[in-house]
Image (cartoon, rainbow, N blue to C red; front, side, top):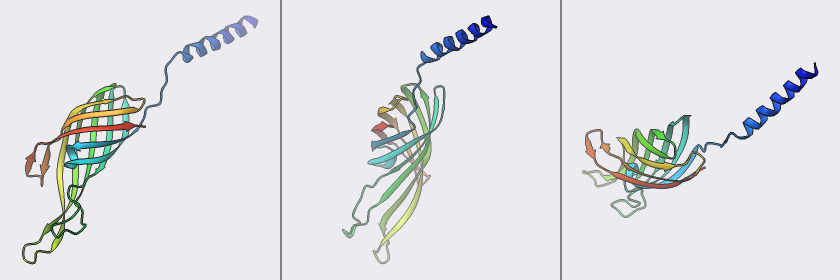
Length: 169
């Protein structure tokens, strides 16, 4: 009986020592970043949420907001708003390859031809992202550079590049 008790306590203490040497860290699932160029046109503020993480493969959902004109053609405050929404797949540890697809929802003010009144239109554009990203899984600074083509009105391909800088938390 004493021998079994000694084996039990040795097993417990040896396992505790083994577990204490394993590095455990919390994966940061939120990223807030600014993008120059890219999916939001000339620039955008973006939030990204990690939804899946398995080994070196991750997937995220990204939502952004952008504008490129704040006043319309009559010089009244009437901003154009662009909302890029994408699903991204990432591969790698700290240095990652990024692939993404999504849509931009654009609400833009235009002049209607018969009466020259400001009318707001809603447009949908398909967007893609192919790039490089540096982002530690433990959080901190994130930066990325990507080729971000936009299929405007789902007819015309426009070539864009985006450079981003942000923070994971």
